[in-house]
Image 1 (cartoon, rainbow, N blue to C red):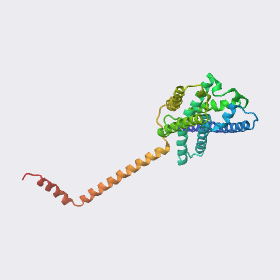
Image 2: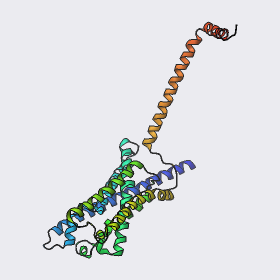
Image 3: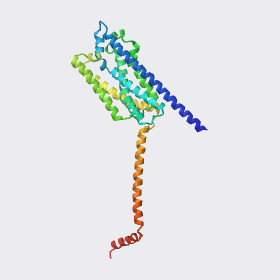
Image 4: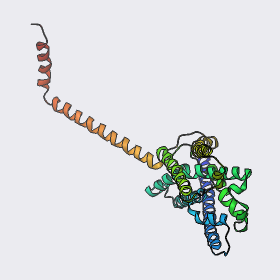
Length: 303
């Protein structure tokens, strides 16, 4: 009876946890989609204005190149993968091949893209904003960009990472090599983008670079790259502190290991069968076995 009650409580906790994840992923995904739509509408509204300031025009011309927008795309992709996986869990299909692939890419995108670049965007934006907001978010933006939009793209993104970390245990990298490659590719690609913009247009994508000398720019670039790697590596010990340090095994991976073990056992059984067959064939001729041993003794004697 006690076991039955414990089992029911366990199922209830699992369902409640899944419900929390699903609700969180759904509303976060809807919010990001709305914010993205609002941003596109804002750009169209600026383009239709008769008089547009230089700062606003710079934003409109370089919308695809800001890391804020790249990070929004990373988070949207992650939330979409998470939401589809949640649906499969509700359908009790979490052990199928599709769910395993979704789980893999969901975790890789979160650990390798969402966490490092979300924390980079939030921390870097608000640090520079605290020093001089004109370097990252000039007051000229206030006329067309509401305060809540600014917080959605620079503050709420970190809240998403925080809640996801509390809800889902990711104690270790899902695929360390792939995640490190993802961080490196985005870091290098983004540096190429804003340096290329400067060399071709003689204008920095971010004003903060314009107040620096070249050696300061190089130092700041190292800080940018270093912070993304720092945030990547920090997420796992923090996750272990929250969820405990235990080994994690994926169902798909376990299935592969089990299959390998079964195949290995099968091969051992086949070898054993072959050996038994040889012994059996020899045992059919006991006379030869008896006198073979005597013959070997004679050959090894000193007579």
